Length: 97
Image 1 (tube, helix red, strand yellow):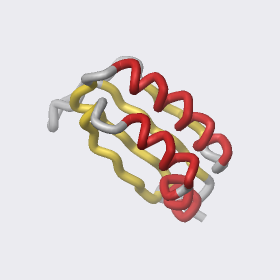
Image 2: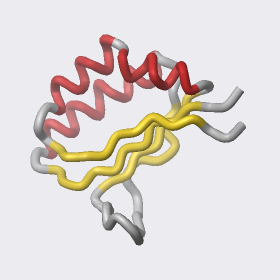
Image 3: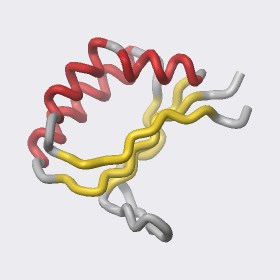
């Protein structure tokens, strides 16, 4: 069964305190949902879209698990804290195998 991935590319971060609070809540929600963060921040070399602020990749055992984690009450609480602190492109994608 193909894995599921959350992929977030941040274009702007306007409130680092809200982002830090979100990160703490989101990490708990991801862990509770069986996810594993495999990329968070670090060095980025952006070629096409020019999005180089911050990139996060979270791996789940399935696409369905990734969707359920995004819709969970725990993650919704994290999003409420994040509010307007960032602009990002957030996607859930299915792996190839």
